[in-house]
Length: 150
Image (cartoon, rainbow, N blue to C red; front, side, top):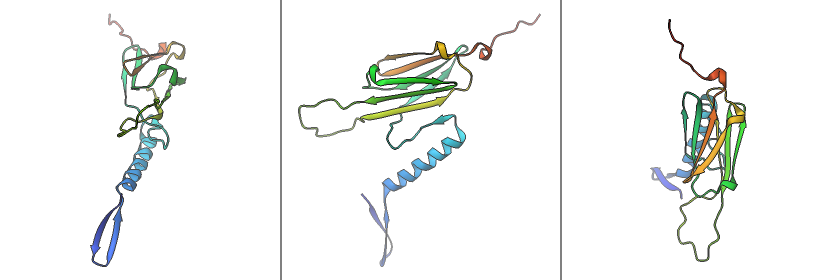
């Protein structure tokens, strides 16, 4: 829906809030592509799930919210320091008429470059209560250790 804005009585300018949101989305994408170790924040087809990245002494923990997604529909990939989570939230079969729709369906994708090297063989993923938890253990040379002073 476009809202008209009048500059004067003879000229009408149309303000489209959705076009403004799309412009802002492209500006944010360009910003994150240049400044942050994240990619695929905003894709035309993919939904961006909410996620937290935590660093402990021995691992990186990524928690991704994926409510309504079955574990069979989630894919986790590791490529060097990059973790890629993709999946699909499928439409369920309905018997009645949908009167209101607020929940999203379709593909989702989250990609992050971890701030340190990891042991790719030790990466694990678990799904519980709609939260996907990925544990990526740090590589031995990345782990910090305390050196006693003598």
